[in-house]
Every structure is written in structure tokens, then in C-alpha cells.
Length: 287
Ligand code: AMP
Image (cartoon, rainbow, N blue to C red; front, top):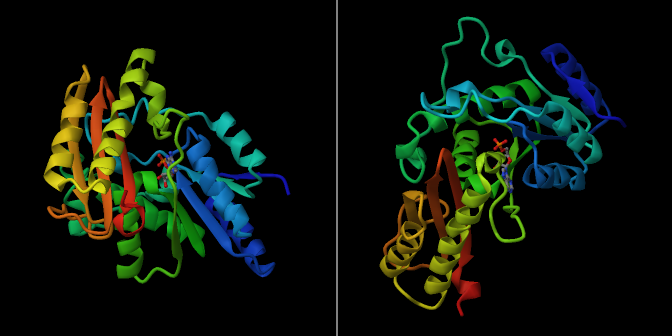
């Protein structure tokens, strides 16, 4: 079946109703567009699950702060459509602003303490904007399964909690991070990097894997964090938002190593903010 591009709520609802009456599960991949192989992996996960697959593209203003990149965020609809089509998604939903934020809109979904650490302090209001738009999109699409990337690990944890707390009747699937061959996590924002910045951006993944290897070798969390910070700070033009070792479920910083850990960091290079993380399980991968 060819990809259908849907730009109205009415059209979306009729496509979803048709799929439901054909007994299909609805798989949903919310995105902001500028699609790359990371997004593609989420579409492929839905297709593997046998879902009627709906991808949305909406650059959500409420998750951007005042100085953020909302205006210049890459918008590449034709290329995105080709990617969805090639991946055999059934619907590309491109809502209008009013479909998501109806005239007079005033309701917001505010996350709890999971939003307080990691990126939270550096992006005030960001996760409230994310929860609000994702809740709205879930209401519009009414999926059975929604697919998110582990690259935005804090986002996945917050959305899982929202789905549980608000009793939303769907399942969240987190998919592994897709990386460039040299390790840089794919991101729509990588398009902002000048060639020289692109080279230096690799310090983030290198720092995180250094930290991971130290923890695997039995070194302390403090020493691993110090080494990661040093690796980042010696890269010129890089400023560090945070580098941290946290519990992958609560996202609380850990001081003592335990079996499951997430090593996470965020840096700025020029006008580009990059985040990344690596998950580890010392019960299986201690060296
Ligand atoms: P975005 O368009 O940046 O809002 O991302 C849409 C979805 O794609 C989110 O669930 C992201 O976590 C996911 N995603 C973005 N980059 C990657 C990546 N490199 N690997 C896997 N998933 C990703």
C-alpha cells in the first residue's frame, strides 16, 4: 500500500478506523521531521511488529525555549515523505498547528521529578512541552504501540511514566540508538555542525565510552565522571552541560556502581546542543 500523507484530523481518524476494522494494531512514531536512519529504525520496528504504521511530523513550539532553534529547525518534508514511503509506513501525519493546539488551548501536561535532572535544568519547560504534545498526538492517533529512541533516554522515561500515570491505553517501545560509523549518535541537529565541529562532536561518544569502560574495569563513579569531563573539556569549542552516571529507571545520579547504569552527557558545540548516552549492565558485561 502506498504511503498516504494526511494533513487533517478527519482524514487521520478515517485511516485509523479503516486499519482497526481490518484488525490491525496501530504503531505510531512521533517525530519533528528531518528524518534520518534513527527515525527509520523506529519505522522498521513498527513494521516488524506488523503494525499499521503512522509517522507524524510536527515541529512542536512548546518544547523549544526562547533562545532555542525552533525557527531554524530543519524542515525537509519531501525527503521525509520519501523515507517513510521507502520504509513502507502507511500514513505520514502532518498536522496543522491548530490540530495540535486548538484555538484557546490552555492545558499542559507537567512531568514529575524524572524531568528534574539531566537535561531538565538546561531546558526549562522542555519536557512539559514534550509531554503535552505527545499526549495530544496519542489522543489524535490512538495507537496501540508508540516507538521512541533510546537516544532521548530521559524523554522515554518521562513518557513511560506519563502513560502509566494518565492510564493511557498503549505500550511504549524504546529502540536502540543508531549511530554514524564513527559513533556519533544520529540527530536532526547534526545538520548544524560545520565539518570541523562534526569532527570535534565525536568527543561526546568517546567520553561516554571511556566512562563505561572505566566502570566496567571496576573504577569508581567519581573517577569515571572526572575522566569523562576532562575528555570533553579538553576539546576546543565544546562546553559541557552535564556528564553523569545515573540509574536508568529513576534517572537519579549514582555514587556507587551497581549492575544497571546509564552514562549520559550533553554538550554544546557552536550553536548545536548534542546529547548521548550508553546503557550498561555490569552483571553481564564486566570485563
Ligand atoms: P525527533 O524527530 O528528534 O523528535 O525524534 C523522533 C524520535 O526519533 C524520538 O523518539 C527520538 O528518540 C528518535 N531518534 C532520534 N535520533 C535517534 C537515533 N540516533 N537513534 C534512534 N532513535 C532516534
